[in-house]
Image: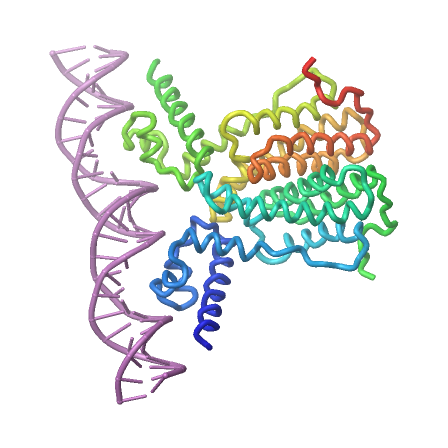
Length: 195
Length: 195
DNA sequence: TCTTGATTACACAGACCTGTGTACTTTACT
DNA sequence: AGTAAAGTACACAGGTCTGTGTAATCAAGA
């Protein structure tokens, strides 16, 4: 039974390395040779697991298509906490923007499967916002969830260009304003102090 | 005296074509051969005008670094009109996102000159917002101008992925909410009706 | 022990890319 | 007419990339 397990383990190793390189340097900028060499396997082995680079790209993006973490916190804190997490993500380690937006921008074929995955991801994130907004009983959760998503994507784009994580804090404040204007009560201590 | 004029005209032809192809298909996806062939000149001629592709890229981005159009409209209408123009830009013709953000995402060298140009562009746009906000006497024009820029960039990113110009309208509404929360009076007819 | 499947090393095809070298022609000014 | 700049055609070097073909090796289960 180790046969199937080995196969899955190898695929995971390939995908982990592909993720690091694709995200860190760009899909077009990283060759299949580089990925194989980084793992220490032959290019032939890689092609035995993924029949083409395109399918590897699709698998790379699909692996990032994971649901947002569940939480028991109140909806407002989850929403605002999302921006704080974004700020930490930008600040820590390599940050190269949204892998889905990057992939769509990098692949010139408009019918590439990556587009569908990117759309699915954005819709998933918007759904996460929307469900929280429904619990907050706002008037138009569809619209407001989209607007919050715009702030996230805007902060990401600005962070790439500026290299400054503080844009996420600005997005957080804007999100708080939008929520307040929609009738949501914002707890008094908006930023989590270093207790 | 036609010597200098010819040279400038040829450079413009090259840059116009480079702009169309670089923006439409991506910088890495378009080769120098393709640009020259599209114009109908030899590759050698192109290299006589731009000594390397990198310099052509820089010239392409610099040419897009133009100031926002001046207007006599009231500041609020200029700000909101900016989002309406964005919506039309997304809807009409080829839209492939922000050329500066794309360039930064596509070029893996972190020290590329494109980064500086992209930052200059974003700062220029933010300055445009900020100057209008100063005239509106808002409390924190630095912060609010950044937040408006986040909405623009977020709408752009979302438009690439979704292919739907309506996201710009959502950004416009969010901008109106932020302005109102900052004490700015929004004229009653927010959307220009098809009168 | 034998078989089967995975992996490896390595060469290679075919395409594309950036950039250069060169000899020839065109164009425009003197 | 002569000269100098610019453009053209075309080959080519040297690199990268995706994907395949092949023969040898290794490991595990029957």
